[in-house]
Amino acid sequence: MVENFADRLAKVKNQIRQAAEKAGRTAEEIKLVAVSKTHPPEKIAEAIDIGLKVFGENKVQEAERKIEEIGRGGAAEWHLIGHLQKNKARKSVQLFDVIHSIDSIELAERLERICHEEDRKSLPVFIQVDLAQEKNKAGISEKELPKLAEFLHGCQCLKFDGLMILPPFFEEPEKARPFFRRLREIRDRVLPGGELSMGMSHDFEVAIEEGATVIRVGTAIFGERQY
Ligand SMILES: *Cc1c(COP(=O)(O)O)cnc(C)c1O
Image (cartoon, rainbow, N blue to C red; front, side):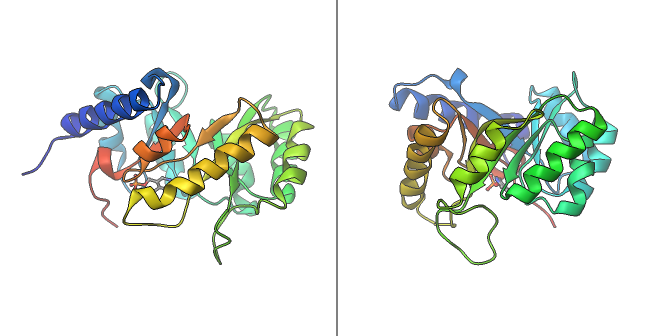
């Protein structure tokens, strides 16, 4: 059986509502970022038609042509959720509304400088935290986090909105729960009341129970990605 796009979205929204209720929260507290990576602009236009507005992309170059085609502002809001290489920093400042993947002071410094140069008055950012200490995985360690947080607090253009995590992949979503919980505890310490970007297609309900305020959902909305 092939579910259609609108049905999948309705199902996700229902799951969001139920997970929120279970945690004594409301669905309105949770922002849904529809992860559109690998999907063509036509598909994103369809998503807009059924009421989606906020999109997540993980590659700057791939996002560029989509953002040019779809537009920004009234049309759509664009979040960079993938690792950001320093040489793509300027392009990201020009293209994205929000960046979820700040993971070093050098990157933050560069973005802050570019925002000044490009006259970008405010750029909301999240720090990506790596709690699993996985090799080759983006994100800053818990130990290094306070220094980066302090740096962001002092920035004029970068606006430190919250923390983001991409935990190791587990078949069983419950196994991600300790990572989500730990991120919330860290958030309470470094940025009380700040946002928590956590939870993907297979584990967003657990993330919501643990306090996610932004979830990044691709497959459950768009279907399987074709590379
Ligand atoms: C691809 C991606 C997602 C969405 O993954 P799905 O499993 O398709 O929901 C979320 N966050 C990041 C950082 C991603 O790269």
